[in-house]
Image 1 (cartoon, rainbow, N blue to C red):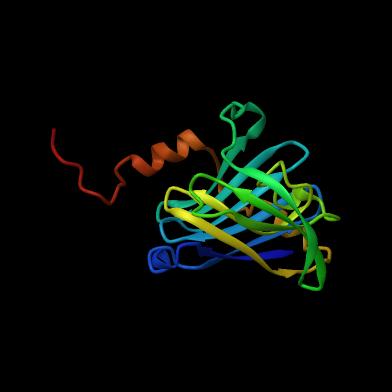
Image 2 (cartoon, helix red, strand yellow):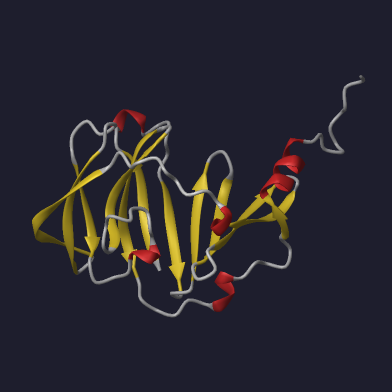
Length: 195
C-alpha cells in the first residue's frame, strides 16, 4: 500500500486545488488506485497489469458504474514527452529507505524539480514516467490546472485483501461511450423541454 499527498506546486493555487491523497494497492498483478476530485468525487481504478485492462469505478447520482477500458486498443502516444531527466549523485532517505535523485525539466516548470524514486522497487506500482527506473517517491505532473506535486507519505508491505481488486456486484460494467451517453441524456426526473 502506497499513499501520496498531492499539492499544487504554486502556493497561490492551493485554494483552487485542494489537497487530496492518492492511495495505491497492488498484489503485483492488479493495481488499485484511489483518487478524489471535487468534480467526480471518489474514483477507483482497477488495472490488470498482465492483460492491460482497466475499470474505473464511479458512484454517480445516476448509479454505480465500472467503466471498462482495454488499453491494448488505445493508440500509442506518438507525441514526444516534454519532460527531460538528468540523474543526480547521492541519495536521500525517505520513509526509512534510500531514494535516488533525478532532476527534471519541463516548459511548465519555473525551475528544474528534483524527483525521488526507490530504485529497488518496481515502477509498475505507479508507472507515470517510463524514464524513471523505480518506484516514484516524490514527483510533479503538469496538468491543465497547473503543476501538481506528489509525495509519498506511507509505504506498507503486506498482502492486501483480495476483495480490493474485484468489481463490486452493485456496479454495472459499461463501456466509456455508454457511460457518456447515460450521463449526457436527460434523466427521468428532469423536465424535457418541448420540441
